[in-house]
Amino acid sequence: MTRETGLAPVMQTVVRRIWERGRVSCDEDVIVIEAPVALVYNGISHVVMMATPADLEDLALGFSLSEGIVQGRDEMLDLEVFAREQGIEVAMTISAAAFAGLKERRRNLVGRSGCGLCGVESLEQAIPEPVRVGDDVRLSHRVLQSAALALGQRQSLKRLTGGVHGAAWCDASGAIELVREDVGRHNALDKLLGALRGSAHAANGFALVTSRASYEMVAKAAACNIQILAAVSAATSLAVSQAEQSGLTLVGFVQSGRQVIYANPQRLVEED
Image (tube, rainbow, N blue to C red; front, side):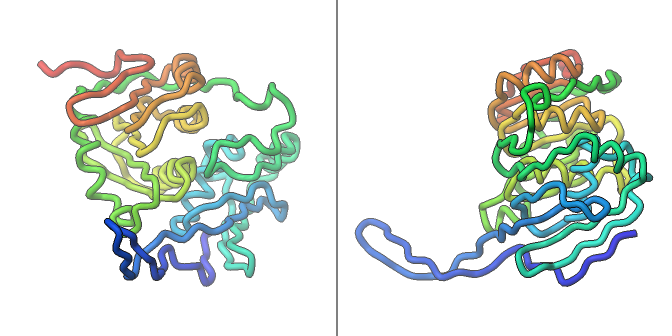
């Protein structure tokens, strides 16, 4: 069950001053809203992140799946979204088994619109054990190129504000089936992962993100059995290592006419 209560808008208009070649002018600009969003499980606050207040049910489910808090949608028993004076609260009720596992981990993160690991208590907790993904997807290089070219036109919030990342699910032909946007790249991916659990989509597709690929992005994708993760920017060393161990195909610098395969290249083939 999902309910929303009085959520904030995702954009606002501000007055700005522009300096250009020695002249100053004033006009209005549309900017994206960034708000604190608390994810609360069975009455206990687990993480507060700075996020765009849209598709918060997808964010909550995707985060819960990619962080291993729940193993499937059936463990998410209830979800309510409330507007609070200080921000937004997403209150979830999860199964007793899932909640017991969450309490045992005792992680109190402070969000990942950046790259922090606040709340991680030891080095052993910092890098999760790699999750192996399947190996039945085969795509041509052209498919990734086609999706990257089309993604900008599907990012409505970015066109209006210029201030968000996007994450897209693309089918085997490169057609974009789902897009989610957020000020945080991790949040955008979590929103996409949550949306995938509640919609019909091609099983043999891939994820495309408008950011660099960090190890957390790879770990989240692998946790949801995504076999190919493509990024428009660079990959980090830990991302490459995590991808190699997970069996995930990691692609970076997806640009017109060029892309870099960092790990498990067997899924990308040349067309006949």
